[in-house]
Length: 151
Image: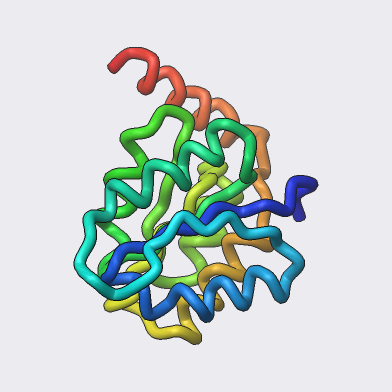
């Protein structure tokens, strides 16, 4: 588990149905949550919510972020535009575990219209209970950082 137990959260209208279950789970696991919205199921634009949550991670205010939209894809696209963010859209727990262990992902994206509440929480648990292994994977993560610097 991480030393900084602060996590950023954001969703759009498509992810709003998972907001309360995810926040309750995180708080129940001892995480301090910074909630960047949205606060209703009224139509809104996911990039506006992804950006501040990811900035909290890059600025060290949160160690990780969880972003939820209808498919998880839009949030992951927006998040990965921000330097220093490695966001993964996961629909099952194995990928969530491996993206932490091998990719040092710092943002988990989930699709509320793709997975139900129970599976979403299992995915979240897998993401939060595994750490980056480093070793041979560290070089690959360094290559990702180099790509950010080139483009």
